[in-house]
Length: 103
Picture (cartoon, one colour):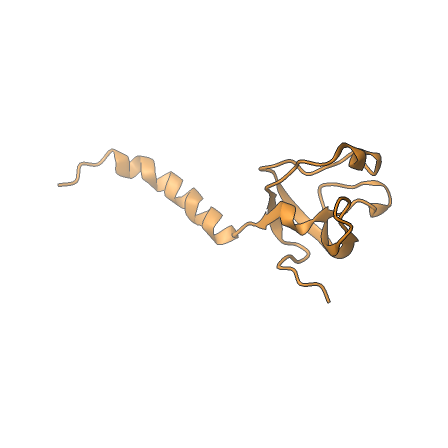
């Protein structure tokens, strides 16, 4: 069984989009740092450079031929949807609070 913190339907953010140029022979859609993606599936995959087997992500937003291109899980971090909601709420409240005078 794979040891990974990712699961289908989860939102993740890419933190590393640096790929060896030879990987471009496998597909034409790659994750971009800072972009948010949805995990479609988590599968075992062989790391191209290290040859080690570990969890790889298939992403809803990126479709490559035959799903042969999986992206190593270390390239992503999970998004905590609650923290994003809290940040959005704080961003809406902050301008209002900034205009008030407090002793």
